[in-house]
Image 1 (cartoon, rainbow, N blue to C red):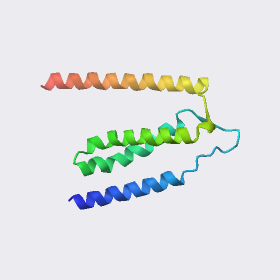
Image 2: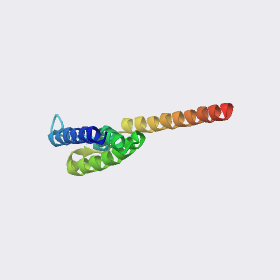
Image 3: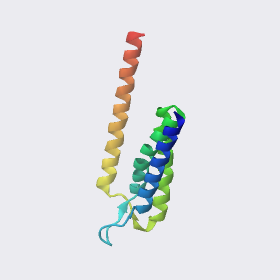
Image 4: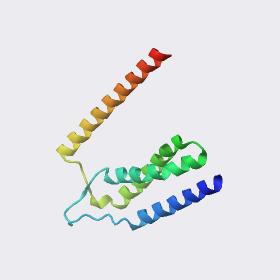
Length: 124
């Protein structure tokens, strides 16, 4: 069933390219600027769903988001370069929020890893 998968992949890629082309990344006011990393996050958010059908087409859906994240980083970097004049450094509040998010996600990662190890050794 490669033909339906390939067709779905083509449709998703065409729609994603149309969305990317039509993105008008302009601040609401001329004084407003986007924080650094804004477009990188946007690119990754666009890339991961694009990777899903790629992984499906390859027969391993789990690799799709990884490929999509790589595509998203490339898209985000291109957008960051394109709109470099509209970027500003992070504020203190944004930096602290970013650090807190990293700490929380790191803690969740460790917690999930510990639970998985417990379950593995308990039932193995």
